[in-house]
Image (cartoon, rainbow, N blue to C red; front, side, top):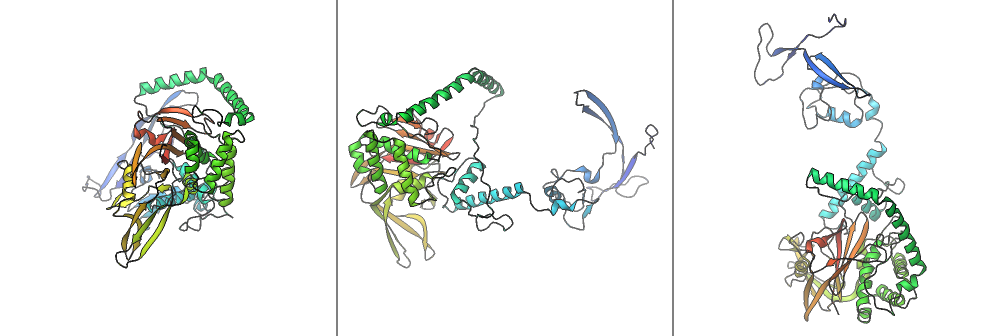
Length: 529
């Protein structure tokens, strides 16, 4: 009894050690029984008014299971597990505490608990979490099997899940448990678009402080100018719309620099990026490219629209929207015209770059003799998972030139097809030299080449002409003109304007794999006439 507070106080606690490293025998006590006495501990208590009070506490340093929290107990297994579930806040905490037990017989629950916390069903946010994890699992499986579309990519979880949802809509992977399966009647909430912050490496604390201070001063000094700049840009954009026929007319004047397509809120960025490259390539030598680019009905109509732009009859955006309507009629899922749903750049390139034939692909099983022949009818080439002698042609050590060498290797390539339990090699032969070629390099980490040469009858050189980047569910692009000048365009940011972004002879190739926080998705090479 502590007379100062008139309260019973524990002075000494005798505990029995279980499986100690060495047996302990104290005089007058049983084997492995030891006494624990009170210890004094000074504690600083900070009050709401910021006043500091010192408290001296005397207590025997022992609590049930040493007062280990559920968080600290993770990764441990206890033959004798003493738990107190009464104050656990969630079913996850219940699980963590009880799953530390090696057996039911070795589990001791000190007092009662609220069973509703583990019997009430999963909360909405937890169901959403599990569903998003299932999506990430399916993305991983598709990527491993080499069948994940190139437009499903991102550096962060929310970007990946959002891209997958726009691709699959309400379709649920087959392996998902019935408790969290979603459908049209029980849809999965779409992940909201979040503008990710730009990554920045800060070398030291002093530099960080200096940069932050400088940035803050600049921000404060430019607050009013930023607002007026936005108003002025909006007015210029409206003025551009009013006078679009004059601004888009390039037929009777020399185009001094490339131009781009103004972004539309119905997710036009994939079209803006690709058509900016195609339009400016066409503008360099209209007569020649008007013939070379008529690959199919869609491209023929597009070239006719380009000519109308040159005559001042329509705007560039009308050309784009005509194409969008045609493709939407063809396939509403791949080419949607709804707010919040975009088009994949690989799907768009594959549709626009179809043509009758530029060669053929042959394969033959050496066991049963089965042969397959098909025509190469697209100028969009997928650079994923071509295998030569067990090596996948991907990664930082690979280039477009190496990939083409593997693709056109006369000994054949492993395209993933099997017959009679053996790999079947495909042999590709190009017979008609194309005017341009596009490559899907999303997530391959390939190094781009400034140019490459193809021998089809004679040697023909192809130059890097356009690069399309993707990130945060948005596309932008770079166009490289005949002189090697690199032009940057983002229809949402720069509108009609293309901005100089260096020269191809001075920019390291590794720098071309990213652009304004986005990663390369598609590259276009063309002959220069």
